[in-house]
Length: 629
Image (cartoon, rainbow, N blue to C red; front, top):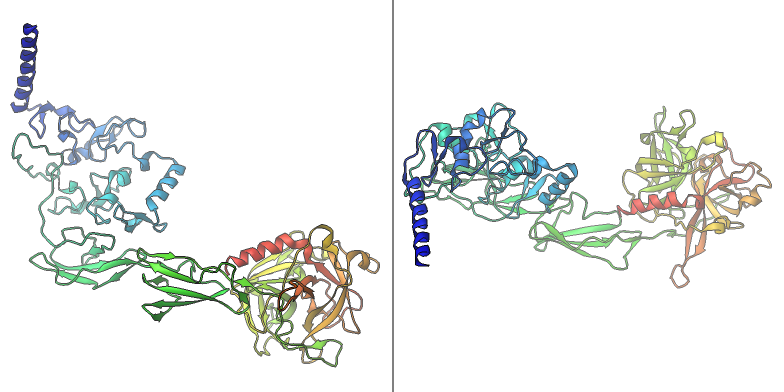
């Protein structure tokens, strides 16, 4: 037993002294000396495998100089090692820095999109989030500088930059970043890892080891003195006079400060770094502001009031300082929602607390009673039919010419007849810039203004199966989305719509209502005409070719529908809420479809397009409009 113990001790000592002699021995010319004094074959250095016990044979300082000699069919690791050509993306780490298997190199498109979303965090689409929490633009990635500013080099890592190919006039840093080739060996670390100042690259000497047990995996560049930036997510971007980004420690002289998109500099644009490495003034901060670029504060149903420290500020600004408070009120023609959100606040970090709740649109109400008029119709002031608008067209005339009527459904949505906006020759809608929509208009003439408000057309949507005269005006309906929302007032208000189901779509017989238009007299004043409806089956007794999506109306007395009334709406007042103060509201039932000759009036029944057959089209457009409320 004692003999076995003795033999074990002798074996241990033999191995120990063998290793010690290898460590202390001088390496031969054909060997590579590791930083800890060990010797390996010179062919085992910079081959992707850490053969030295301390890994010093696979550092960027040791290998970057040989990068230019690694050509196909071999694969160049980012730090300079040369490995087998099948190394990239084979699932096996062949490079000591794993640059052959990074996500950016080996992921497919879907994986890259998901990875980019992770990197973006809560930053903008063109930014990534640094470990410190600040956001930097992607254009600052892999430029050699520590733009995250926390000393980690996160934005200069092999993970981000290892897959990049640098152009011939540039130098590729040991992490894959690209800098100008003229910056190598200039005594300054222009690569974050200092690889542009590697001793073997620049023919300088390695710093001597203090002792044989010192382990060195990389060699630092020249020691620099200067000022430092404060840490944290409010750290600014530092640049020199030539607009080059600087990293700590910053050189003596004036340093110029800026901030990333979405941040605002608070403090001086430039500060002097003195000879004693001290700033002569306070370094500015980059404060993340709340944005309004997606109109978070705006909608056509609400008004915003912004204050900061009790003082009014402009709500229309793109960026708002933390501490800004926003209160909302409903605009004219809108009511408070059931669960309103009346306040938003810009919190530290550039995030809004709370959110704006759109107000609920009112409809079908008028402000004043009608005034009798001696002619067949009834002349009205603008308040009696506030949903009625005029559609004006510009073809070859010197001014806009009246074309049709229409009805306002929301502040930026008008319903009219398709034939009013349809080019029979080209079988498509006219261009949107052909038209102007005028609300609150009393006189028909475009140039004769009172309190009317004018608007442009952004989108024209014609009913899917409309084919003009060729199909006898089947589906004669169009929706016009406006360039800007109208502001509601006593003379501009929307009409109500209600959609029935199944057989109720035809339940319109003997409904007494009215339609609006401008008189054929010389002054062309706004008027409305009382009429009574007949359902499709009743209309067919006199109009055999009437389409299935139509009903008809006949007027009381001698009042008739004229050409200018096309596109206008037939409305009737119905009771919607038995308990409301104003329980009766005006609802839209149809759009005037038939179009007599200019300044002539229909001598028989007037044909209406029944909006009940277009509930999907109308509801979809109104829902889309409400997203802007």
